[in-house]
Amino acid sequence: MKISEYFFYTSKEAPASAEIASHKLMLQAGFVAQSSSGIYTWLPLGLKVLNKVANIIRDEQAKQGIIEILMPTIQSANLWLESNRYDSYGAELLRFKDRRGQEMLYGPTNEEMMTDIFRKYVKTYKDLPKIIHHIQWKFRDEIRPRFGVMRGREFLMEDAYSFDLSFEEAKRTYDKIFKMYIKIFKRMGLTPIPVQADSGAIGGNMSHEFQILADTGESTLYYDKEILNITDENDFLKIKDLYAVTDEKYDPAQAKGKVLSSSRGIEVGHIFYFGTKYTESMHAKVIGKDGNSLYPFMGSYGIGVSRLVGAIIEAFHDEKGMIWPIPVAPFDVALIELASKSDEVQAFTEELYSDLMNNNIDVIYDDRKNVSNGSKFNDMDLIGIPFQIIIGNKYATDKTVEVKVRKTGERIDFNSKEALLKYLSSELNKN
RNA sequence: CGGGGUGUAGCGCAGUCCGGUUAGCGCGUCUGUUUUGGGAGCAGAAUGUCGGAGGUUCGAAUCCUUCCACCCCGACCA
Image 1 (cartoon, rainbow, N blue to C red):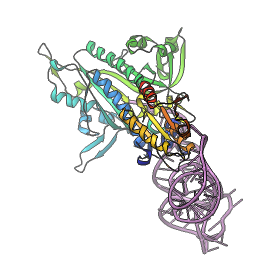
Image 2 (image 1 turned 120 degrees about the horizontal axis):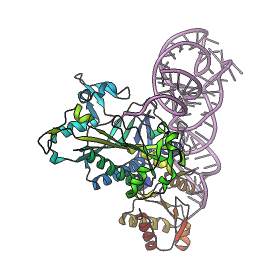
Image 3 (image 1 turned 90 degrees about the vertical axis):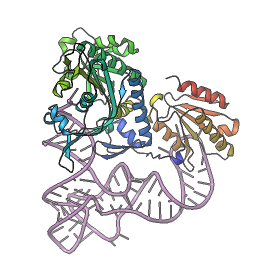
Image 4 (image 1 turned 90 degrees about the horizontal axis):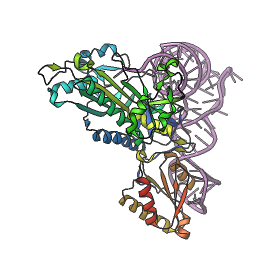
């Protein structure tokens, strides 16, 4: 993509309305534009990241045999009357009427609708277990939206719903998703900390929040530091056994004798087992092997997709701007053409641009004229593309092309295009 | 919802206390020109319902009333 043809607007100064790094940077770098409190337009760069995050989630779910559907944003109040949540859900639920006076709502979550779909189609134990997920915009009319996309009112969420025939099987499903979540967050370059959360009336160790460490997080965590050393998601049972809670669940008596770390965290995922709560209230029964009908055991599992974009920035940035992990970067490579008297510079940059695209490297080409070199450097640092290829007078004089690694600041010179392409392909495929 | 704050050009701000000609500055934008390895120089130019509505006054960005929007702290957070 050539910047001259793109929708690329950065600003030198961060907007005064933003407080935390991710919010400031997203506005300054033109990733999002605020529409009203807690509601944002996703501009091209932000949207690319959002889609990459969503696709990693989609990919891992597919690997686990979790089926994707897409439920609507608008729901009928009738379903919520069935589950008795229409009254118990507070003002966070955005309610309105259609032209016929029918009570509607903008979905804050989809347990009811999912159970409704399930009961329409699934009639026998032979079809279970089933796990279904979707990625859709939600609306929760938060008392106080804040921190940009981290606590928006409208937000993109991935939510999965599982149906099992027994508690034991539901438990296995829960563990499978627990493990998958660790893998998903690690693929984005993050270190997730699963903490115990309120598990409702059912009890047991069956609700976890997945937190990302960041000073600007809204939760305070107490956790066994060992958790950070477990890098393989296959060791998830060890992770599950280690002590980790948010401050509201922190109990000094339980924590006695343990060496705990305390940090702020951002909740990016939440998994929950709730048994037959919705299948019973909404009469979603299947016929069992013995001929008797039974209520399937459910769990639901959510990841804040739009929140993750902010959370990743909180985890990876410096005073110059964002530093994207490769799997979620808006572009793999920034190609910076510096001003030069030599026509060769532009000709070579154009040529390299084609070569990069032919090698399936997603490149943003800063071909802007009348923009100073310093502005180009600063813009590319700001938007945090992992690798910058800089072509200027060094090329004109001795055919040297420089690569700057955004994360480390390391600079590497290349004297052949082949060596450069080889280096980039190998670096980009490490993840 | 309680507390605090802000609204003046696309962005960042001054001016408001103490009312007084055509409302300023920096960045950005446009034209020309010279530059170009870390947010360029020079010359010129455009851009405003001063958040909205009422009111006081000869006169309101400035004072009064009221409404709205946004931000921060808290409470809230299937």
